[in-house]
Amino acid sequence: MQIVDPAQFAATLRSSSVPLVNFVVPCYNEQEVLSETAARLCRMLDDLKAGGKLAQGSSVYFVDDGSRDRTWGLIEELSAQRADCCGLKLSRNRGHQNALLCGLMSIDGDALVSLDADLQDDLGIIPSMIDSFVAGNEIVYAVRRRRDTDSFFKRWSAESYYRLLALMGVQIIFNHADYRLMGRRSLEALRQYQETHLFLRGMIPQLGFRSSTVEFDRAERFAGESKYPLNKMFALAWRGVTSFSAAPLRAITGLGAIVSFASVGMALWALFIRLFTDVALPGWASTVIPMYFLGGLQLLSLGVIGEYLAKVYEAGKQRPRYHVEAIAGQWQR
Image 1 (cartoon, helix red, strand yellow):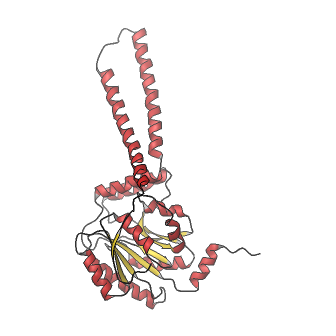
Image 2 (tube, rainbow, N blue to C red):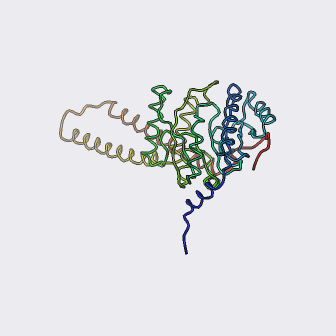
Image 3 (cartoon, rainbow, N blue to C red):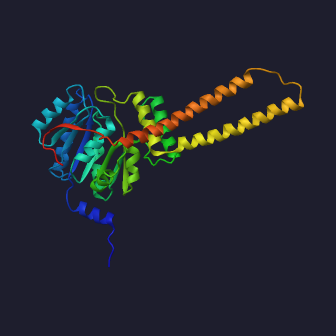
């Protein structure tokens, strides 16, 4: 009996037919850039279909994350003009990760490509991503080649964060955000994950499956402003740490042990001074300083533990991660 390798079998199937690949574009207050984004994506779709790289049914799906401007109105206009432009509107703003997950879980196709609406992701590498998928890779990660367009602080903080996650044992692709291609098998595997606090760039590498990377240079934002200011970037980074690593809890245990040993050492030193010397002087410093230090350490430890307990509390409620309010165009499901 001959055993067939699943990856080789999938590659054979893909190479024998043109894949249907759909594109997922989360949007939040993107009225200034959406028309240009749609125009470039549609031109790319037409070229790939004409070149035989994509099936004729391949489309672009815009997911409106509860925008407050004309983003949804523009999506409706686009869907009325072209059959391969569709839209889905969430009932309120649920955040980029939830909007992206909604698209990934709602759209049909052999594979889905997720990308941002700000035109910073290089569309020129999409043919290479499709070729890699047809060759048998279930997940294709788009990785930034360099960070020349970032400020020094942004570049240093981002790269340090990736290294920190790797040091904590989190499986993550260095310099990869949410620009990727996922095949149907990996999408169905992702459907089984029920996390409340999403950090997709940490979840997807855990799926396994054969994968590859394609490098690209990130461009400047075409128009509008970033939807990830410093506070949201910090919140996403903290979510990534606490969702995939128990290292902060273990660090508290280690720090507690170190402080305990140091306290015992200080007690022995104070006892030695008191019993064997005559230089012991009464004072408030020896009492107040350790008290403030231990109090601050305890509050910090409680805060970290509370963060993990809050995640358990949120997950225990099992509330839906999003609600769909409206759809536009010929939505495939």
